View (cartoon, helix red, strand yellow):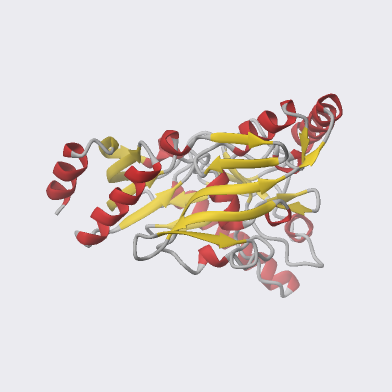
Length: 302
């Protein structure tokens, strides 16, 4: 079946195709085993065709963005990884409305709209990820979330149809959306509504926050950002700190000494190391505080 997929994908010139591609190249943790097939469709239409072909052949697959919130196992992913990237990297700005492809970097987008004197994406200017991923998990920081600026999103549904979902239909909540239940739906594009602003002021705010981030987070080490969701009114970093877990290490994975809600790859971690450390942190915090921590990191192929 993989042979049939490769033949059709190549014949229709749908985009880049690699075999046995290490996922460690495509995650910010810098871990993950190979994918049997790895594709990057070159357009919105190619993405629709790719997903339709995968479903017709009944193949296992996973759609990813920039890999900033993923923990794949070290094992072979016996399926197809579909990466939303260069074929979905368009940005169109009309007054204060922005139409953007799901493969666009959130950091790049924040800087682009700032240069157009538009405010509203400063909160995500330091979050490494894609627009599609940000919508999938309702990414947020500084008390603001993607739901606060999103008008609607274009998705490919389980039947391979392109449909628009409104902000309300996406059912946003803290670090989640309806897309986490609809595993076979894929974000293609989003329409955002921003506010008029001043570039110098926006750039200064983003600069200040960048400095603060560098001072408080282990930005120089591979990680997936915050590892656990905050079990409000508690904060994960505080629970982990109070459990005596700062600096605890399993293999090459470590609870960051700089920020306890970050698990970092100190240089030679395997996905298994990170997975076991996540479980260890959950177990200790539950034992000491009676609170269950839920990962923000999405784990697959385990």
